[in-house]
Image 1 (cartoon, rainbow, N blue to C red):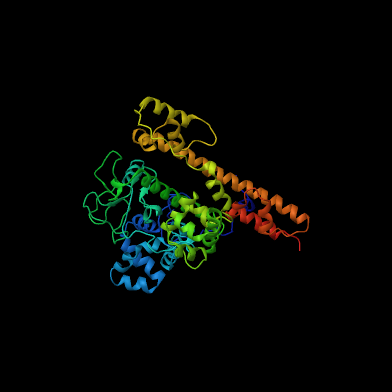
Image 2: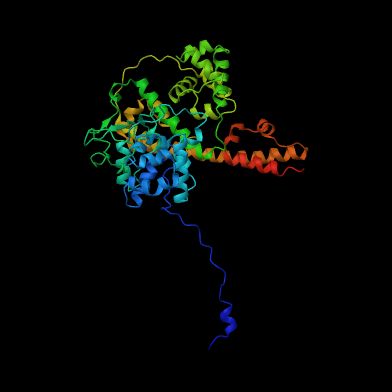
Length: 464
């Protein structure tokens, strides 16, 4: 039976389909945003060139340079991009070059989160001076593992920062010379490709049991205390990088002077000279920082944070760091001198059973590897040498717990802000940030985007 014409017309859809905007270059997702090992911008542009099957220099000269239209790019383009490659560290930093490349790449790829592959967010509180390495550094074991697991090979932003010399994932120092040609590797070249030497083209990944790759030249001469320092530095810088996408706004430079002043007040009753002596820094330098007349370099700022027992993230973003410092410096928290104990023999089976039990245990919060090592009575590095995979799994379990806890606290803080705002509004009081934070359980969580957005929504609903 032939259907009626009217029944056919009802099947027609004359509305034009909505076609999403198309990007000029591949919509390549950056690796690890919101994690300590987030990709660097120099790595991203290298991978972007690889995804288009062209040399990095070709991509920059043909696609990025015309879009940026800045003197430093045009001049460099006429020299085969040598001048730009010599300043490649700036692409991951806090200045105009990083901003220009982020904007150009976001326009070409339609990605909206490329600023998190740089330190642009921290431009007001982190000095660019000596912040980045001039040459490439990498963890050869990370490369090898990613390759075996068929994961994306890339260069984390963490590896480009000069003070970070250690890979906390594998307890190994970062490599600085190619194991094949023994040369240092420029951060960017015409043919740069993550995971490979741009000088000889050799693969830079090595198995964890291999010792032929070249680590930092100082790695064999560090004491136990120095190794602990290197591990801590990598962890706190990684925490700072990982937190960036979740923060509501960038901290102002006044925060450093504020936190430092509070620390001096608590530790030495406001005596700047005494505080400077404790942290082994010049008195006039600390005075300049405390008065807000200058900013400290990251390495010196970390030295202060380590002495106070606080993270760099808390020091830069906390509204009042006083409570954290008081807790850390409380006499009951001070380390007591321990009697030197002769090393005991390593019980392989006992330690293995204990590590497996820790992974299977639902204890909340889960133990850190440091706590596990203390319970077992062995050095953490000794345990790692025998059971690297179990140690990494225990550390990953703890990190996942911390991430889930942070997200849960953000959600709870959002609900709390809503409740506090409703109470204030019912009283006819405008819910200012100051009033709301006074009633919050965790006022510091106002630094996160979600919590601040909840407050702003409540403020916009205020009658009148």
